[in-house]
Image (cartoon, rainbow, N blue to C red; front, side, top):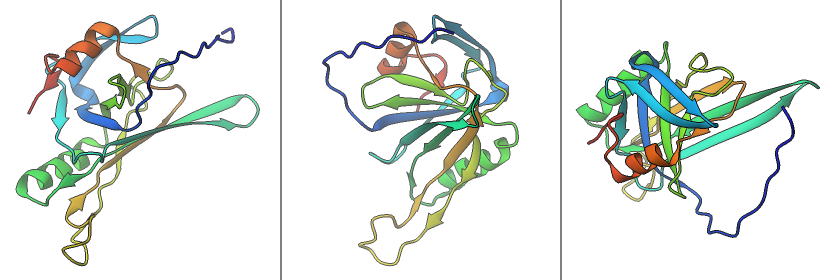
Length: 184
């Protein structure tokens, strides 16, 4: 592969993430990549909307050299949900139960671009996200900001970076009309 050019455009850049959706790998039957973007996903409404706490969704992608001729990419998706209830316990248990086979996640970044995390052009669905933690703490007092929050973290290590969705599918996700998502 030849070295790619990069031209900076003067546009606003917004940090953070605004939405997260999670699917079990087994229910995603096909992923179509066109010109380096996700153009279609098929399955039985595979992605579930996670109504995370505002400003608690974080996606980290770390590309790291391993020796002279290899790289690894670590993907981590983290979000907070409140408060401990039967519904939140059911979500955590479903993440525990689905972790052996793995997950894919759609993360909407602060710029409105949706990314498929846990899938890449090199590994496909073979190195999906898995639950790495889901700590919960009551906190020590009513003023403890992190009290009664559950923080699921999904993690994977692979050989390629996450891919963005194309304009059409990205627009449908942002408009809340995509049929690949089970909306709340």
